[in-house]
Image (cartoon, rainbow, N blue to C red; front, side, top):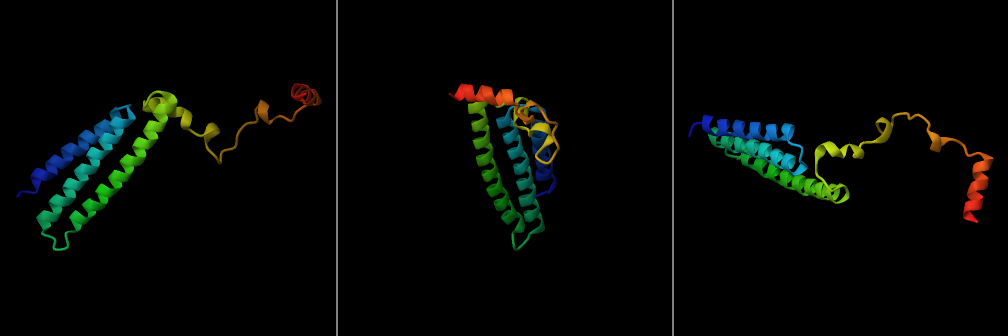
Length: 132
């Protein structure tokens, strides 16, 4: 068996997966594209394992680890996508900007807004009247 055939097929699979990750906006299609990329890597691992005639079969062992990681990734990814779909009604990646940290992240300084101001005595009186 020539090594070129599975290598070319793996490159084609990887390129299709890369295109899917970069061009698609649906989160499920992006996850499927990542799976295509991982399968291209698995194909290369097994092809090189057969070509090198490795007695330990390290390529096949690494392929099993990759399949396990892919299964965990798809399980967590689908759980997150379903949760986002339930709350937002869409799995569009462009509409997920509301999940970002406000003001640049947890360690970034933020500008004070109206909620950071100290309450005035008039505000305290209004709160006391509202609770009474």
